[in-house]
Image (cartoon, rainbow, N blue to C red; front, side):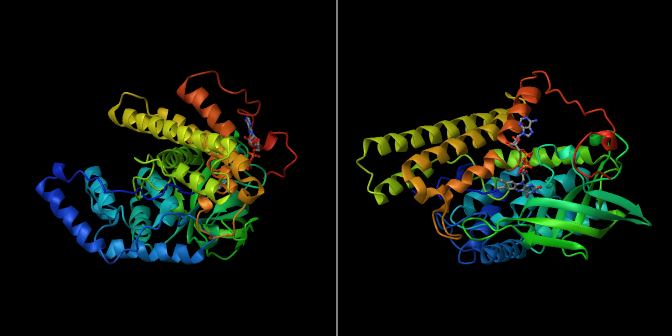
Length: 426
Ligand SMILES: Cc1cc2nc3c(=O)[nH]c(=O)nc-3n(C[C@H](O)[C@H](O)[C@H](O)COP(=O)(O)OP(=O)(O)OC[C@H]3O[C@@H](n4cnc5c(N)ncnc54)[C@H](O)[C@@H]3O)c2cc1C
């Protein structure tokens, strides 16, 4: 996933006046430590582009710096390497970190894997893996989608078989963001094909460097590789790296998907910075710049497109803020977050259509790493498909938020190995 919000311009707003003494001390410590150590935030620099391996490396170092300075894992319990402080301290940190680049490539780790481990991991798993992500030593990815399809996640084909004390995994995963630069992956696999498809899955923590794991980066039209296809051939996973009960992986996956959606709705790196709902409308400014570059600044059709970009940004920001505030103070049910997620997807798709009309072929793809790629048309896939397609998000909102009847599922209660399909099953 990508984070596309740019640094707001103008003086920074903080909530310093609300600080207690302890909070004030923490604020000053964070301010002093980051000044001169962390790189500045550069508007337009990709937040999360796994094709730029040097940026990924830079983020590992940034996370290490924060860890060394006692500023990593602010709300994570102390037993797992965190600071054990409350959310207010995290907000203070983000206010102070606003001028700097943070370790945005750790979005998968902090937005997805961390909440999954905290909710379902064993004590040993939390102690073993959480400090590694907080210190920037281990990068994580999620191994869910498969070549046979991603929307029907419960229909996945990768098998995990018990051998001795551990498990052996075989199959293929695809579209794994950052798979080629990750050390560990959260992997859902089928452990019992004889029961209904949702009931025979188990979640594992898989070492991406393990023998039998082949990682093939997928080359994008713009040059680099953001995501990968993996082949797992007898990849061994010890039983202590199983998350949750055997055949209860669907429960763990729900936490994972909810965490991903929440991260997307907030702005992917909300675990690292309060990006989501920007105070300033920054993205449409890029359209203004682009219209000028294309010599279309006085073209009424282009001006209309730019105007619409401002409107959809305003609607996006205000609705996002309303839902965020409503779910925080309990006026809206937690499922309202699904509407935010859908809004992100819809807004992205519309922005892409606007860009297409404004820039024409020039907007299709930019060379990997070029500044300003946040308005490239390829972005539409990020929220239109990634983290669940628009159609699946519509289903979620209608079924779980609005309580409408469920989509008919002919195979929901059929044992997985009896479902008729043209894909090979275990
Ligand atoms: C930027 C990006 C990053 C990603 N990162 C990861 C990652 O890190 N890890 C990972 O595991 N996956 C990742 N994915 C994969 C993503 O989760 C899948 O692409 C997505 O779930 C859709 O699966 P699919 O591509 O197989 O399409 P399919 O599931 O085959 O869907 C094809 C089309 O059919 C539609 N469709 C399917 N079922 C229904 C239905 N019931 N009702 C209506 N329409 C339906 C879909 O909406 C879609 O339009 C990423 C994808 C993108 C674009």
